[in-house]
Length: 315
Image 1 (cartoon, rainbow, N blue to C red):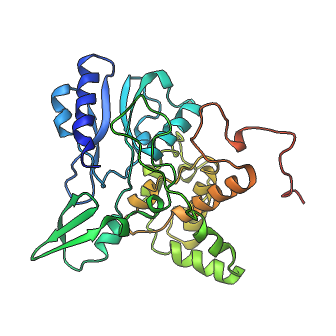
Image 2: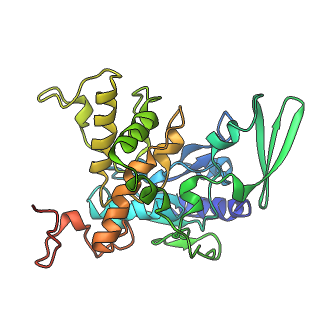
Image 3: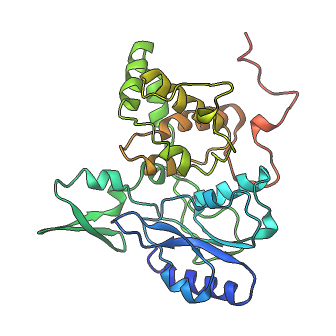
């Protein structure tokens, strides 16, 4: 993926010079390792700041909500699926966008890498399928395939599903992958063990809302956690309030989540919050054969009515 950057900069510069877009949303190098930051380029002189590597895990569709400008946006597979969601949900218009598609080979898991080293990581570099981690008096080479984000390891939509121009030839999609193995494992637990699992999962939560803020689906003008009339839950870090926040937020993503991993990547304490939305993604796939963000023509299952809809849940 390191070879993409020249093409990304060339396309972005051309779009800005020709006035086809008012800005290009991409990434620039972050101030700390493994944390490239979203960057809005409005002048072709600044396209040199754009970067692309395995640290571009933030979902850039999050920055399209209710924008009125003509926008160029750099989009990997999951970003493109969320762009489809935004168009379907009338948060942005297709004709506003010039989508620069990026075939993706996966993003590295910064939490996983940080847990492997006791000393501070100063720099992380890449060479093809190798990630080089450097710190004070140490350097280690890691196989990228072993340190991918979990959502990237099971992704079957690495190529953009919607784009105006690709920066490279499509990559080979992964096949024969059990995407929902972790979900079924939890489903098979007895109730007591399942309750303990979620208690332990969410116990580190500090209610910072980083997962909500990073999610391209969380664009409500007033989030339910901030409502006071009525007040849906308390503001404390009481376990019941924490669980209510995470479970309700996950339900709001039902039939819409693309498993982009932005929520888990943003969590400062490394909680696997994906497992909640993953369960609902699994249910939508099993019940309706539905995967979010693959088509501009088809409406999500919770947004449509069909006479042959399953009603087994009605008791």
